[in-house]
Length: 67
Image (cartoon, helix red, strand yellow):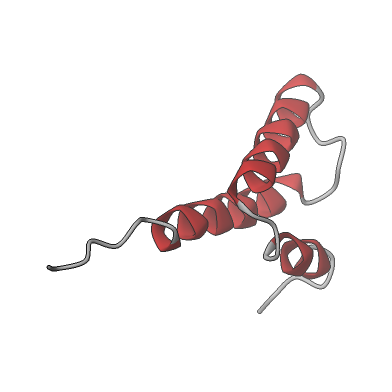
């Protein structure tokens, strides 16, 4: 069951492309390392963003065309 607090953020992040999604994920991770529990549910948000990041990487691999 999706969390009603983190679901809107993850839906917004689905529209981001790789560089911005990677920067957002890295920034939240560093913020969580420096100041633990500053944002509620940050661990769940980071897991969702990491999943989106890996999915985005897999979808954008160049396809090889056969001659």
